[in-house]
Length: 292
Image (cartoon, rainbow, N blue to C red; front, top):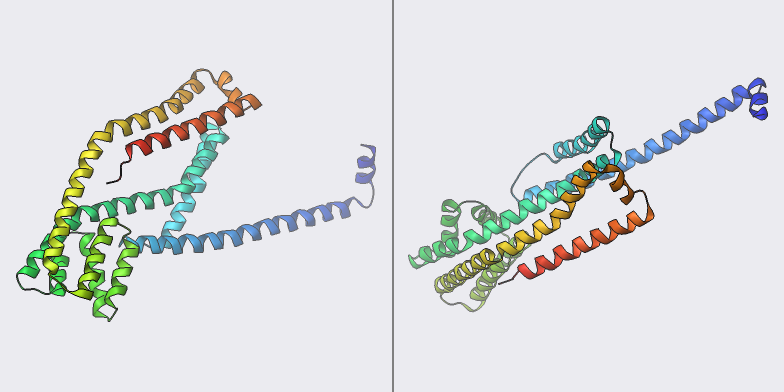
């Protein structure tokens, strides 16, 4: 204490203040520069990934605008929660959820699109069969499919036809579709087309047989989904019930619940609960997820 009093009264005090100010300024500059470099890299990664993902689903949205919307949501919403509620853990949890939300939304949209393509594929194959039996070639039948069938089936085959018009090899165009559509049903179609192109045969009969096979497969999958729906719902309820009870108990007995994240025993209990919840949900999903 005496040293500080002597320092403030000495002639070196302004120099010390200047040195501290310069050190703080340099530190702040270094932090801001690192943050700026990180944001530039994150923006490039986000926009490139978003552009590619949206293009795969034929959604042409400005990726830069999506990036700024994502940043605003990540910054503003947790900050408002922290200011209004005053609960930092909740704000951090919301921040984490918002950070992973874009990827989760994309995976959900892509899964729905692939599922819709699977549902439309048998009808599209029957349409191709009818056109080819009427005397049309495969290309003309595909053009009719593009005009008559809804998206996403029409969109994917329209892109296939465009690649054919600009001179892309047939196998290469099929490979591009397989990359966009990693589906077992579509892989069966591409295999049939490649084999027919190499050794010949009645393509109309092959496509009709494949369409009937896919229809029976989808009917069986629908029956299995109906029979396992109760088990899947029970898995969701049993997984979410402990979380709901924990939230209710936190509001009813906050002092007792705070011991879970303020003591070593509480951390251990939370870890065991989370691990058992996760393992239970995974086991139920494996039991009810029957692949046809």
